[in-house]
Amino acid sequence: MELPDCVEVLTGPSPAHSVIWLHGLGADGHDFEPVVPALIRPGLPVIRFVFPHAPLIPVTLNNGHVMRAWYDILSIDGDQRQVDLQGILHTRELVNALIEQEKARGVPSGNIVLAGFSQGGVIAYMAGLSHDERLAGVIGLSTYLPDRSWLAANRSPLNLSTPVFAGHGDDDDVVPSSLGRTAADALLAAGYPLQWHSYPMPHTVCPEELDDIADFLLAVLR
Image (cartoon, rainbow, N blue to C red; front, side):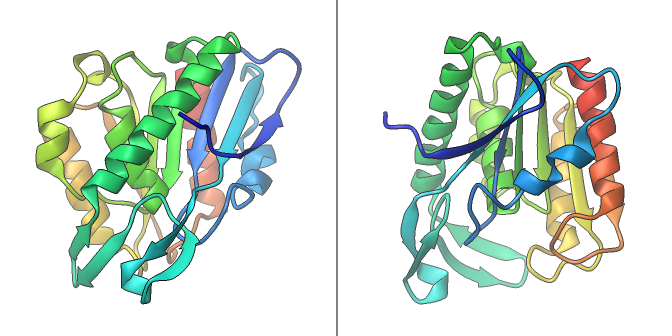
């Protein structure tokens, strides 16, 4: 499988830990590149941050306009979203290939965190919690679970105890906070050790959230 183009930021030489971070709809791999300095804490190992670019595809919801997207969104009705599950599963395979690339570069799967914002967070949940090797952590930001039944049927026993960070803005008018909370509650009910964080912000990230993510990375990668 051909790997997506990626932006990479290393915090030092010879990293043995990686964070694969997927952007949201219409953005690209540069979107979260600037947050790396805010995530560095004393005690963290050297990390390779990998920010892949989503492919350019027509998005039905946006009148078929071609943009970077991890999967097609067919329609939105309030809290309901009709999405292309096969597109999500195709991107899941891309993420698996990125994980394999990190392993080939000397980073064991147990030292890899999978993170994502909005659409990218959907992939982080669906790919990370179904991955067949244990990961260090999963981060879902301003996101939701589009198909809980698929994840329940395909979740990986090795990642049932993987720490999960879920963050969401109370004033999010793109992915309502209720969707993020519903996803978090479903994962908590399934037994995942999930941390829920809410912030007074719209569909974005804020300094307080970045501080909490930095603490999470320190805990799971130290």
